[in-house]
Structures are given as structure tokens and as C-alpha cells.
Image (cartoon, rainbow over all chains, first blue to last red; front, side, top):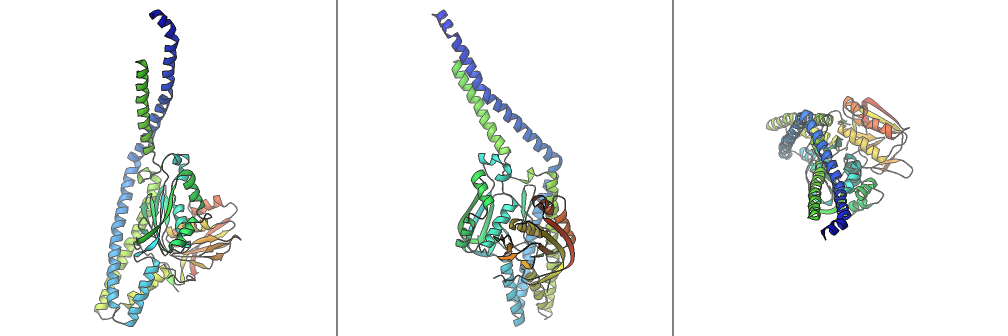
Length: 251
Length: 218
């Protein structure tokens, strides 16, 4: 029986061994590949971080913290000056008229808080497998934000803020490397764009298939995060940066 | 037994594989960016940008402290604060685009193919370089301005058609804006690569006169 067994099962054992080897081959190759990619990724980042980036990173973070503190001081000083002028404006009709015009201009220029209904737009980098197809097309760029803001003004927006930074006449949405700055403030995705204005017109302008075609295409193909929804009771902060009027004089 | 051992081996390898795949995806999270992934060159540019912004805020803080003190003294002396109010009003009228504005700056002249997204990017770049007031041809760009295009290839600013060649004029520091526009790898360089055949000229201007917004903001 045993001989017979050995004689009859020998080829079968070989086949089983071969099958096991083949089954393990593919995972083993993938395993090796992933280990090496992982090792290289870590090695590159560590080298950069240790040699150059750490002090620069600290400097950038420190400047951003300084900016946050400076903005608080600026807001306090603006409030103090407002208070002085408001109390002085009771002294004469001319002063009262001037103060009223200043308040009106501050509101339209984005220097006052604003509350109201409108839309909320979320823009975010793609996540998951679809993102790996094309990194450039699956992440959000500053130009996506400028397009979204342009579209909001087109749709009749009265006030816009991106991640708590109010968009005003001097605002810029700037990109360095892969970091985005709005009003000089460092930001990273997801971006929440709050827009106060006529809801139906705003929703219609974002739904318009002829507008924001690039963003919509990247959402559909690469999974870029882009969604627009109706929002009520929005609260937008005032612009907290410098007014920076030095070269320009009114005529 | 041998078959069981095979299954266990494959399971262990598969587990490691899964673990590594997840780690790799998380590590490569390009896609969730952070400052730590920036190159030293990018970080240096970011630092320069942050420093400029912070210096502008510091200047304004100094200016506001002085103005607050002056206004207090004027009120205490029975003079009221009309001077400060008038100063603030004229500053806000420029900031909101509500008054015609003069000053030094730069002009970017564009002749050839151009589009509304590029115009929007150019205005964004000028603002980042510190432009205090901007106009496209004879149309003032305001805080809520938007850019579009017409079927006959004109561009629009707040629905008003502006036809090429376009003159984008910006009041602000001529030197800072000129360098920001013309630097290697800057926006004009990028435009020249994208819009081949279109001519871009940037010039420093000692005196520009920009109109006010045609429709006042409400």
C-alpha cells in the first residue's frame, strides 16, 4: 500500500510544492517591492527634514504664529479707533455723516463681520485609489480656489471667506510648492469656502456645466473633492490683514 | 499538514503585504499635504512671503497707534476727530475701489490670445505683489469683481467687455510688482510658455490714473 501510495502520489506532491511556490511568488515580489519603496520614501524624507527643513519649518511656523498675534493686535487697535470716532461723531453732523460713510464702506470692503444665507463649497484633495492615477490632477490648486471665488462673485456673492480668511479687494490666493496661502495665511486642504449671497443664483452658477469644467472633470475622474451645498446662518469674519494703501491716493 | 502550512504562509505574507500597502499609502499621502513635505526652496519662499505680510501688519499697527493717539488728543483738545475720519474715509474709498485713484505702479500689456482665467490669475498675482488698485483697460477691478469672456473673444470685467490688447494697470510699489511679475518662473514667464505668440510687456509707471468702479458696491 505504502509503495503503491508513494508511487502513485509522487507527481501529485511535486505539483503541490510547485503550486505553493507559485502562490507565494507574487506576494513575495510585491512584498519586496513595497518594502523597498517604503524604505526609500522614509530615507528621502528623513534626509531632507534633518538637513534643511527643520529650521526652515520652525521659522515658517513661528512667522505664522507671529502673524496670528499681530492680527489680534491690529483688530484691537481698529476697534479702539472705531470707538473713539463713534463717540466723537456725536459732536457734529459732519462727523456723524463721515462716520456713517466709513461704516458703509467698511461693510462693502469686507472689514466688518457678515452673517447671512448662501452656499458652502468644500474643495479637497482626492483620496484613495483614483488619486494615484495623476497626482497633479487629484489635488487642489490655488487656481481652483481663484476659479471658485470668481464664480461666486459672478453669481452675486456679497461676502466670501476661505477657511476663515475673508476675501477682500487686496486678497490673493497664492501657492508655493504645494502650500496655499490666502491673505498671506498658510492653509492646507480641505478648503471650506463660505459665500453669502442669493442662494438660488449661486447654486445655479456652480451647477452651470459650462463653468468650472476642469474642477468638475477632475472630481469625476480623479475623485477631487468638490461639493456645493445650500447653507443658512453663515457667519463670516472680517478681514484681519493690513489695508496697505501707501502708493494710491484718491482723486 | 503541508497544505495547512501553505495556507498559513500565504496568510502571513498577505497580512504583511496589507500592512505595508496601508503604511505606504499613508506615507505617500501627497494628497494630504503639509509643510513638512515642502522643499527647502519652497519653504524659503514661504518664509519671505510671511515676513512681508507680517511687516505690512507691523507698519499698520504703528500707524494705527499713532492715529489713535492723535485722535484722542484732538478730542481732548475739543477739536473732534474729523481729520482722522477723513483720512480713514479716503483710505477705504481706495481700498473698496470707490474712488478714482492715482499713483505709481506698473502696467502689463497683453497683445494676442488670452483668456479670462489667465486675467484672473494675473490680477491675483498683482494683488499678492501688493497692488493697491487695479484696472483692466478703463475698467476698475473692485473687491467683488469677476472675469468672464464673450462669444467674440473679448474678456469681461463685471460683465463689461474689455478688448485686447489689454492694459492691466496696478498702483503699488513699482519695483516690488515689476520683480514679482518678471522673475524667472513667474507668471509672465509661465504665460509666455502657455500663450505662444502672445506678447507680454511689463513696464514701471511713475504715474497711473485709474477710474473708480462704474457701479458702486452696496
